[in-house]
Image 1 (cartoon, rainbow, N blue to C red):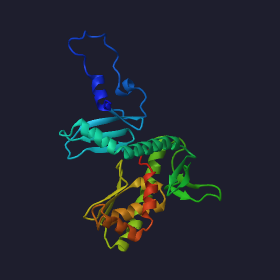
Image 2 (cartoon, one colour):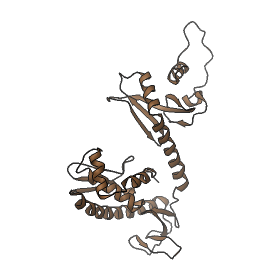
Image 3 (cartoon, rainbow, N blue to C red):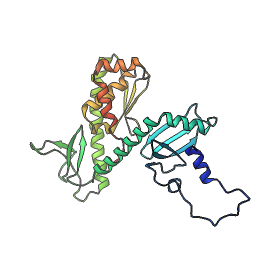
Image 4 (spheres, rainbow, N blue to C red):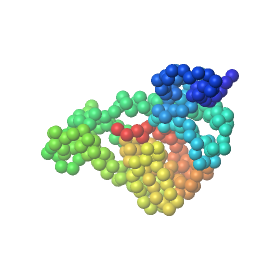
Length: 283
């Protein structure tokens, strides 16, 4: 059986010189030429099939020591050193096929969920805050943004002191500023709670806007936490906090590291799994 890689190479090869040139055909993308593809990266230049599922992915050579795979909102990206053959890349893809398919499905599900839950920035909009829903209310007489309790069956309401004619961008920016202030205060409190339990000291907290990571830690005690964690439940926030503080004792993901996390959070695995279902996609 011919490999998908050879099929792609043949597909775009020119005809041998002895064959008369055919009339020029309209340019086709890779996915158009291949037909139905379940997962297709916008910059796809190669294709592979797992269990009858065709995946068009972006492939590039890179200065690295091994083959790298990443799955993001656009799809699968594969990078490999120049000395690695395409046959070896194909073998590595098949070896990782279960992981790749799982990540692609998870990414697709998150994309659909985000599209469904996209916020309309206007009076009365609803957004997630600490794992629950709050409602936005524009009140020109309001000073500083304030969260107020609702009735027994009503969500809490975030009052915004904006003009009744405020644009969607102004409303979004005002809400984000409020959320980031809440995040800074809450994250510092949770760091101060877990640091003594772990026997570590953190030196600095920065709010991150990174597109792929919930948090990071440096050996000098600097902690970065994504401000969008404020959307999630306190259980998920605490997991990220404990995870990053544990790196101040173990700068790796060794068994000793996970034992450190477990020492303050016995159910960390369940919290970690819930966090995997969350998305960092922008509003």
